[in-house]
Image (cartoon, rainbow, N blue to C red; front, side, top):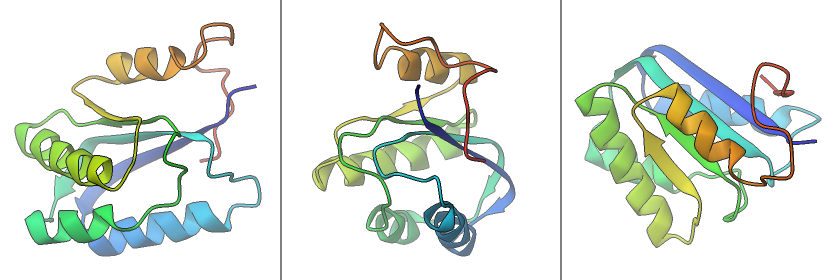
Length: 127
């Protein structure tokens, strides 16, 4: 069974919010670093600059090979997410992608293991 951590961000999105979300994920008894992650930023209002994006990229709970997809629909959130993905890649992360739509992100996450059932409404999420 596929394990997926789904993170939906609404309202102000800053370093404090990111740290709080990470602590919540880390504290969840079912969390494992090998799980995939879907980060939905479509309703987030970015309050992060390049310095905070770099600092955020140094915080990580997931294995370098875990598949992580970010959905960023605005130009600002997409650009900042790409910057984050680039910093994570420099640090060895192998499977972090940024998408404009939820459908594209889910398709990419589902492609992780074609023999498994696709990610969808019946896929268990931690959050």
